[in-house]
Image (cartoon, rainbow, N blue to C red; front, side, top):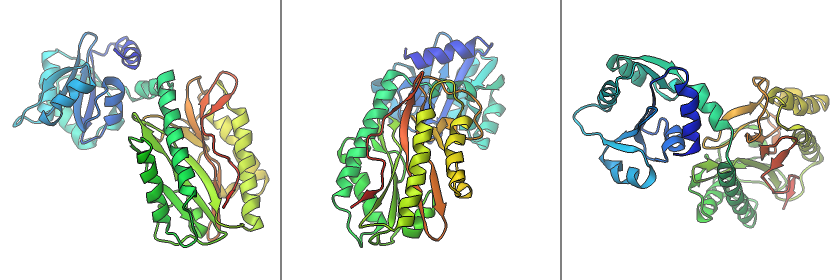
Length: 360
């Protein structure tokens, strides 16, 4: 049994819950399914009791389950509905109190489930999220490999960047290189935004042609064994103007101050304030609208966050991004992003690319 599953069982079953149900319908919760069982398919129900670990799925995945998971396979067969089969298993196990991640199930599926089961349902989202936020050495190693793949792909992309290329061409080449280098997939749709479009924090790569001297924000990541990297750098083809250099310097300084402050015991709010105060003191506080960072792991955005919303102390083993930015509508935007592991008295920076403005 993997230690994640054991820890979650230890915490949840002591509260009087009889069984844990993880519903993954059309990839709605592939993350927790993979985390607890190892199974990566798009349809599954995990039913976990103190003594049994059951996985229900259809014929597309019976062989795959045997290869990926040690859970006991129960074969789902139509014409019975999938949720009817789940309810039947729960009834046979005489479950009276069921733990469920409510934020990972649609309203329609939740309503269908409660109409079929005769048990109390308790939300266990917080427990699973908290356990997932503290990464094991193996998880951190997977994230490190995801970072390495992303960084090597970026270096290869820099070799072919030319004025007149489309943003979409650059994004496609970057994603192609990540897969060639061993990525299971891209972590998310790569952001390549140039000139005025770089002021869009989540500017999808467009057909815009990249011009000489304008900043290009590239935000990308690789997925390796389910774990993601998430990096942002700014490049210019040719010399940028002094205003671009000045804004980049402010963002770089804000990030450096935040990185130096990260350690176990500090809250997400405190670290966010350090970077935000630096940007505000430079006169650009209103142009930094998002949180400083987010947790990173099986999901690109998970707990804990580095933002005003998070007053919980960081813990050893948390992996977070640190990504301050300044976005000047109609002009340009600058963002720099690192992936770091929280340690007792510092953070370990996993990203290794030069953080300065990249001038080609």
